[in-house]
Image (tube, rainbow, N blue to C red; front, side, top):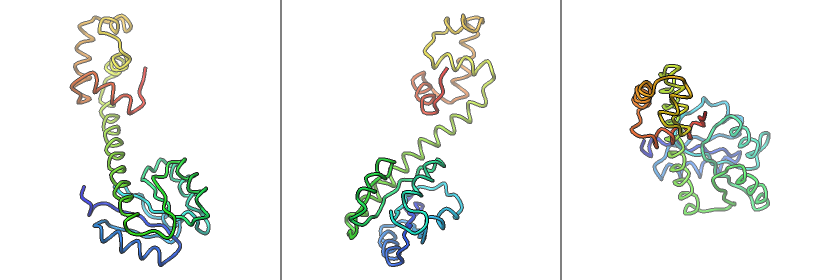
Length: 205
C-alpha cells in the first residue's frame, strides 16, 4: 500500500485548522478527510484503511477524549495524534495513557507534525499486518476437523506426540498424521510459527 492509499482523518471544529492541516498533509502525499465533529466522523462508513487520526481534544458535544474512548471500546485501532491548547496538557497525558500515539500543543509547525504522522502511519501498517495475519490464521483454523483441532491444542501446549496419543487415547502414528495435516492446513512450517500465531490469536488449551 503506497502513501497515496493512506488516509489521514482530521477532526477539528475550527475550519481554519482543518484547512491548513489538509493542505499540509496533502503536500506530503497523503489523502486527507476532514470532519467538523466526532459525530460527523462516526457517521462515516467504516474504513479498513491505513492511516491515522489527528484529533482536537476539545470540541463541542463529543470531545476528543470521548471519541478515543468510543473507538477503543469498538476495537478501532487507528493511531490518534491529539492537538491541544497549552491548558489541555493534563488531558493529553490522560489520552496518552489510553493509547494515543502523541499530542501536539498549539501552535505547532510543519516540522513537528509530519514526522508524527509518518510514524503513526507506519505503526498502523504494522498493526494491520498483525491483525490480518491473525484473521487469516483464525480462518484457517476453521478448516481443521474436530480431531485435528484437539491435536493442535495439545501441540501448542507443548506436549510430545506420545503424550498427545495418551491424552486422546489414539495411536502415536495417528497423532503424527493429524499433526502433519494441521501444519499443512494452517500454512506453517515449524512448531515455533504455530505457537507464535496461536499466541497472537490468544488460543490456548
